[in-house]
Each structure stands twice: as structure tokens, then as C-alpha cells.
Length: 204
Image 1 (cartoon, helix red, strand yellow):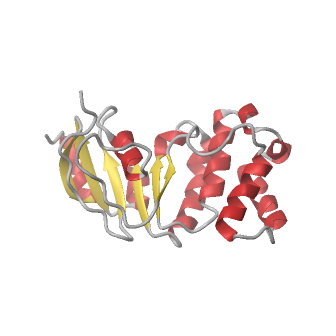
Image 2 (cartoon, one colour; image 1 turned 180 degrees about the horizontal axis):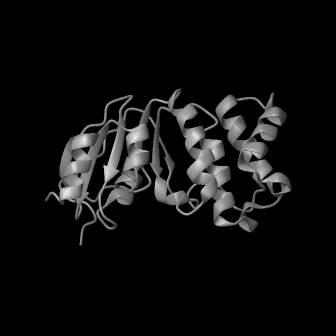
């Protein structure tokens, strides 16, 4: 069985693309392909720049690190200096509401706490492209409120967004184009409004 089959499309720099489809349609698999987490069994994915994943909390950092050490490594990687890190850490801790947990190993964090730290770190710096699975924060009221505000700020500076979500309101807030997947196939690719209508009617 193939999760995705015979897909062909282009995402241009600066586009805000929504991925729509029922559970099992292939949205998460496609995000992982775009981020180079998975390799296609046939065909190819051509990228001109890095797509940063905010998909799964297990793909991004050694959980034996404390939140502070993970933040320090991420800051150093993005800034090439440690200057200004203390102020950055203070702001990150306030945003994520991790308090003293920032000094504990990430493996001791709850799922929601890991989501907060990862989201806070990835959206603290400018990236060429971001792949986001809204299901990562499903059920977390913090994600549904504060993360949306942070994402709005981040998208003012970032280039491209690929967002998988079942929330039409969230997609309408951030995306202008919609790609609908049905059973691993590309069922529709066009404006977000038309994509939502096609998905609702069950195209394919």
C-alpha cells in the first residue's frame, strides 16, 4: 500500500498552502517528504531551500538535554554567537510558560510542554519555509491561543508555509492556496476557498 501516489505540484516561495484531507489521506506523509524526513520510493522532491518541520516532537532534539541547553544550541546554530542568549531564554521561558521546567531534561516534559518549547524555538527565528501539522497541538488550549499569535508574527517574517489542518478557520487565517489529498492522490489544487468547497463535497 502507498501512502501517496503520482503527486505532481509546485509550491513557490512565499506561498501559504493548506493541506486538506481526511485522516489517512497522506497529509503528514507529504509534510515529511517536503522536509526531507522521508525519501520518496519513486520520483523526486526538488527543494530550493530548507523546509523546517514542526510536525513531530520526536524528530528534532535529544530529549536528554534540558530545555535551556536545547534553546542554547538552537540559538547558537541560528545566530552563530551566544551573545544575547540570556535575554532570548527569558523571553522564550515567558512565552512557553515552562518556568523552572526549562532547566529540566526534555524527556521529563509532558507532550504539551514539548510542543510549546519546539514551537517557541522554531518560530523565534526567520526560516525560508515552515511545514506545520496543526494536530501537533490538538487539544492544547495554549497552542490554540498563544501559538496562533506567535505564528502570525512569524509569518510576517517567514517565506513559505505548508499547513495541514482540519480547521477551516485556521487555514483561512494563514493560507491562500489549498491542496486536497484523497487516499494519497492529489484531488484538487487551487484557491483556498475552492479547495475547502471541493474537500467538503468530497472530490475524487
